[in-house]
Image (cartoon, rainbow, N blue to C red):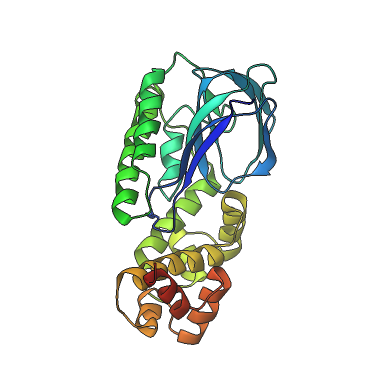
Length: 279
């Protein structure tokens, strides 16, 4: 009988914008268990507790084992597979947010070297950090904040042991991060992609290319998605009317807001509110 297992917890929709845990868990894999080739939409740190396996991201392929740690980068094709004789057992935490990219660049993880070998960082500190996030799992806003706090602490460990200065940023990354900052501050106003591009200091077409390169989506789609996420929070946590919420998150046309909301969530704002309130 196989002794493989998987304990996985995916967080609901109460994401924090700057940094938030997406999922967390443990898994002991079946021999030669494989994920991918595929693309993730979030970062995910895996720490190997026992056994080993092969990890491929882009042109990098490496065999990793107990004590090693690897990261999945969003928007990049990757694959990982457990060994046949001693398949790996690992714990992980996935996360996303506007702070994620800059934090990871301050660690020794990179797209060229998406792993840190054992001995560089005390394994117990990594394992404990991931365990603390897992123990706080939950879909309440309180749990979301608590998990994010532990995630910041874990990432601080990786930064502490990095021992290097932050490398020069890819221009695409700098433009996108500056645009995200502007969106977070001004999403409640009727800002346009032209406004964002003007703030960043590049043309609309240049901004579009940067978002496609780094985020695999357009700046308009990102802006709309950000506004819809803020609307979801207001629908769950306030008694504001749908019309008031539409204006609060930057939609001047209530009908357009409803169409955009249904396109992303599959239901109308009112239906979304009723479903959440009935739980």
